[in-house]
Length: 279
View 1 (cartoon, rainbow, N blue to C red):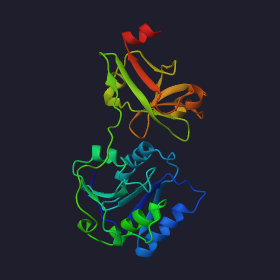
View 2: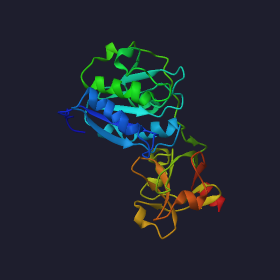
View 3: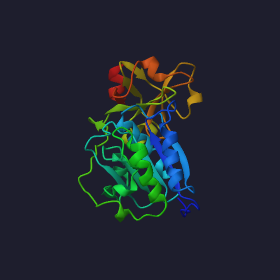
View 4: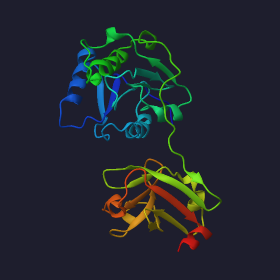
């Protein structure tokens, strides 16, 4: 990447599971703009699966790097709202994040070399009274807004090291010709995104790739395409998606519906002799 350009106005992105039929997201934006009218607010996604911390983490991990340095990423996927879980903010080399301490930033912890995590305890930056059910409005939005106005991180709270995090599922290699993974997301189009990356199965991308089979819910996929349009109508095929993971897709169809699978489905890539033995 080239030299990073700092934005003229502070950018705050918002990712939530609030959907778009209620007032929640709009109110959070109002809170931010009341504190900092100069803020540029960008919606990343408000259709994160309800209460699904991993889906929120995946959404954020796929998007945060495409923003200018100093962007503040506000994430509210918060099934523990009103409980003892902590509000936190973190600083990495180029970004800041505001979120509940429930693991929703786990993939940021995995991918960033430099991470400083703070427990937000300076409640004079909150809206009052603080609701037990809408911390997005009363805690996270105002903290992000004050952060965008240049308030130093040190003023929000102390550094912590016991923050919540999970380890994302990793594919497992069993011998030379078998890799087992799992579906980690089904997108809007019904593409089944696995946790398998090209580097996990480099043989598939060699100049002369071996025979292979991808097995998912007793279905077998035997073709690798470089674009969705290469697939025949209703054909199930494999493709490396924009997220960098191996996906199971279909041309203008929902692969997930055809395969009758959802997140968590086991995926096995069989190569060479293993693929032949499965036939």
